[in-house]
Length: 365
Image 1: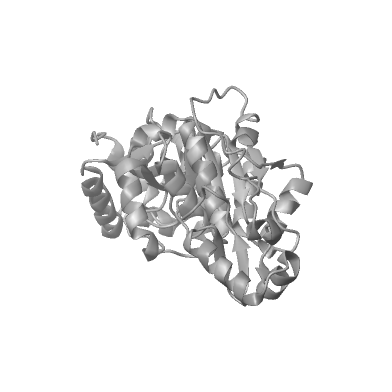
Image 2: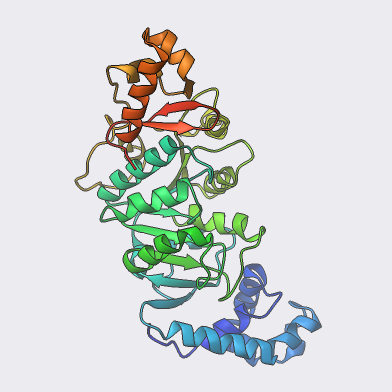
């Protein structure tokens, strides 16, 4: 990236322990750009920060962290974006505490495009992942950039769907941008860095910590026009993102599920609270005022296709072999044989406890 002469000053303030977004912005409002803040006598800054924090401003530790960040930013495809940069995402300026700095790797132009957040359970069902990926692809084909958090389950499926269309995807990390978490998503992260965008507000080297992820969630919703929740329990980080979206004035969407599934409870609670019920990409696009979709494949049939044969007796909830025998009037051997065929064909998933669940046609993994 281009090297802003003032970037070192931004980094020096941002990398000083104890100076968060709120204190950072108070200093900017009072004194101007970071160069002006750092030029002030430390006594003049005392009303805004404790003595220990001001001493850290001039520490060797902070100086070394600044040097590491400048070196990282000098690499091709790497960016450190400040509040004063033209490429800073406009929507983030609307949230209560926009980060003073963003570390980005990849296609930074995606920050200027219309986006939709898609989030959900880390322990998603195969059908939930298939729904997330199918919807994300359709929305990406329509021109929306898919934003999510690189977690296992729904997030990863949403990123894969986003990458399959021209809208691509942005992964907002709860770690430093040079740290991949979870490690199982390292290949996906590499793909996003190449064809999408990785984004973090945390300094280089920041390890995963529980408190970072709720903070990360406000950026996922803040970057987007709306937030779609696909499978979420009542005690779910995805609901934190949805609440942040509502607080930020964004649209909130949710996909309903089985009344027996714990992973549907969070989505049902959102719908009861006024979230838009989603069965297809069209349901999302209809709510995004001012956004004009480009050509894309409809998902209306993809999420509601009805099949004949044993699938017609399965419904959409997990079911055991004995129940299928009773519903279909078939022997256990016949049902087991047909389930195996359907499983090999990607139409049915075997679940723990001897249960099986139908996967929609065209949504194989």
